[in-house]
Image (cartoon, rainbow, N blue to C red):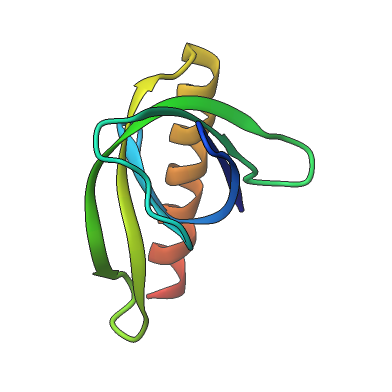
Length: 103
């Protein structure tokens, strides 16, 4: 889950894909291209991450070969080193889980 804080107020959203440099965010409302905004990512009940980002593109993606999601690609413009390391660890753990389930 995520909350996107825009000039018009907070928007509930979902993170569908994430990397160190950005994320794909699915949300119901359109955000202006290039607008900087805060995003609170909630990867677990114990931790949230607040990043600053900007909308780089919008459209649909297919992540798992079955489901298509509409939303926006967000480029992170400010991310603390601690949060960068945490996201990196989440990605590594997800990749480890995926590769072990394929064996």
